[in-house]
Image (cartoon, rainbow, N blue to C red; front, side, top):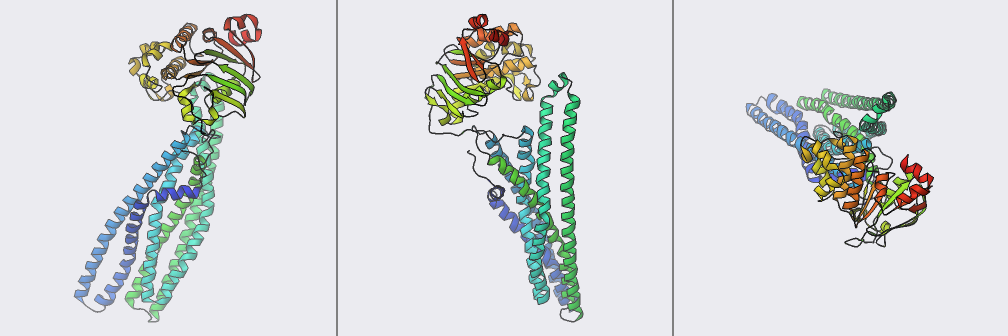
Length: 561
């Protein structure tokens, strides 16, 4: 899926059109329900005029039977209308969540730019649900309009002034409702923005709880979240005040309108223009008007909140992709020759690197940001502003990002594990299960766990220690058997003996396949064919690890300190 220009209106249109059949069914049934509700006072008026005033038992029985049929229809039509509307709402929200997930997980990236993980979760849950509710609100809004029309026709039959009063008075009332809903829409959007930001901060704090405790930063973290939470609370209270003002104003307008209809009906009855039954029907219809107008108020509020949430959904869906696919195609199978030519990206400045297929190369970067930028270029998380990144002679900026990552696997330093077993996490990378476990020393991790490789791992691998997580994550990367493997500091949380074992395992398992180790670990650098030194975004030297340690003081400082 490629990101396209998406607006809040298009999100709402797609949510409705995707459930058109269910929305139409719910609208028809709900309209029948509201129309039937409007007919009840009309039938009662007919009972008074034809049965009571005319003293006709037969007419009374007939009209009572009609009332029974109407009430039975009301019961079933409302039940099935509500079921269809709720189903359309849930399915639309589900579809939106899928679209958001597809966009966030798209190889081209970009949807996450400038957003915390918790914010994206909030958009995919709360905002998706609010947009979905539009499908539940629309049928009942249509039904309320049907109820008003049936009432107006009935009143026109009784009296032209009464009918015209309803027909001509309803549109201005609906327009006023729309205007009253504007502040609610604005404040709902602000509420969702603040709530999403608070969720994002909370997710970050929970994820880094161990680190915060380790450095004694709990009070600072609490203060940060308290401030964010207070801002969210203020936005929520402002939205609640707007909703209260919205609902109260519409209720007042509705009450005034109903009073006017009842007053006009009473005057017509007193002048003899309408019968007693018509007066009863008119008063009943005036009271009935409160139901459709309350529905209008509810629908307007849901639409206002739905539009605000649709705007946030549209922002994610229409986010430009960080990298785009071209017409380039990597060979299959790929040999794994990697060449960077005068690459400028982030902190990289005119960086050149040539890695022949099958070579194991170490990269030592004085600045961690430079290492991250190099990983982004190699994994095509971003394209160079200048220069090219070539694999087997093909410019990666012209290749589908998904295909790039089939050939070039970048194992980041902070790679997370997934909820599941150790084996499931390792097999997520490929099929070389046992060899990868041994090469990464993750077999020792499995041996220490009560269930071995079938031991359950909690979310993000929090049930494992830092070193255990690193080894399982490395095993997952090695199991993929990618033609080009780029690994960033995979052993920072393990002891030196285990680190040496892992270094030998990587050299053994990756022999003959291109491997780039971005690290300052002496054990890992010692098994490489050569080491490239990066400083200031440029290559400042290269050679064998042992020679660089002997000849360069800056290199010794970087890898032996």
